[in-house]
Image (cartoon, rainbow, N blue to C red; front, side, top):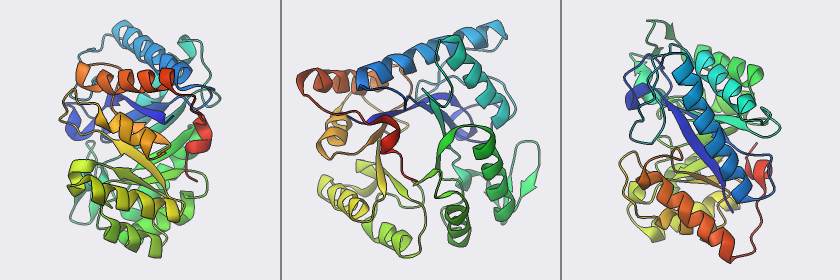
Length: 281
């Protein structure tokens, strides 16, 4: 059964706030079953709502079901999630780790990554900032940490963090096996986000997944920002043995339909849930 990657706080293009990174996610790594992990994620999500209410923030949800409060920094977002994990009775790192989708291509302007506070970072400076976050928090997965065309930067990022952190290429690889092969050849990233309608067909998707497996890249089966209640990606994640699935918060029927399908599969079959072992690093 796949390890969920649950988007519970939104920023970037997905929200009208000053959070520069697009998705702040949790992964319930410390559990022995998918059901237990999902219960943890739901409880943390609900406690995050209580925490935001207590601090006077809006708890309206975005397209992917996560909250989009008016907070200003990645550190503040991660601290809010940490306190919600603890309030729910779980332990940060032991039970739950963090994942980011930086969507860094959205930040790039004239060779600099421009943040909402007008700070402008070079590729090397952004790598150092991500390394700082990874040292300060149990940040076990970073998606699109640099621009999709910043291949030299990706090489440096992978060299710096690739042995301890899952580095996921979404905009970088676009579920395309030829681009993934270039990444493999250049030792760029160690994981790929898989979106069926990004490449176009199931057969091409399977070819990309197989190539990733051959080179020890992890696969994260993913929804899209605009979704329906169709739950096929749940079956795809289980059927291909992909160790992770990214399908939003435990909120909104277009997101929960995938979790419900996974619960149904889990109840029907005797399948392993490996938790933290699914992460690439």
